Length: 173
Image 1 (cartoon, rainbow, N blue to C red):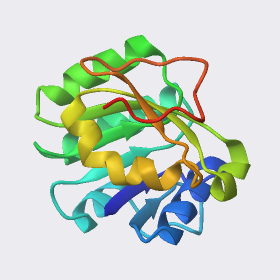
Image 2 (image 1 turned 90 degrees about the vertical axis):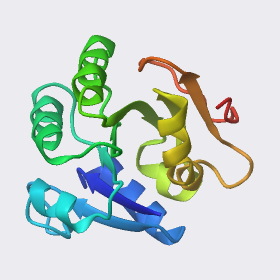
Image 3 (image 1 turned 120 degrees about the vertical axis):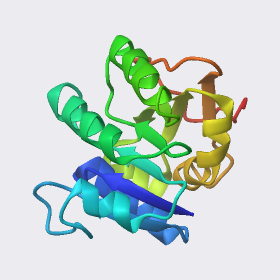
Image 4 (image 1 turned 90 degrees about the horizontal axis):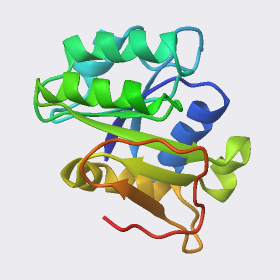
């Protein structure tokens, strides 16, 4: 599966590497990393085949807001945007509504695993519409532990966040 990964720091960079190791095509972008594959968000969106899946893995707050707002102008109906940056749930709800008005799906994804996730897998809890979760399922499955771990689809109808993530739950989607 093809994925755009925005934010190639310690977590995002290791997640991109794990996905590549699992056979996925990752187009990476970061404002300051030499590891990026493209020079801008516009170039990232242009390089991905529609319908696109784009994962934002930048710090919560202003960096995420600016990134999601710019992507909102670039993505098209049928695309899915994933926010893995620990945003406040109220911000996620507003972003889901804003993007949903354009037909763009939005998933709020809590990620746990730190820099060891590349080798051990990540614990992932997903909030958002079931259809969008299914679109991104191959990505979630590649990121979770190989020995039977999984991800939790925590909210079928509205994005949520939590301060605790499960590393051993299997999908309920």
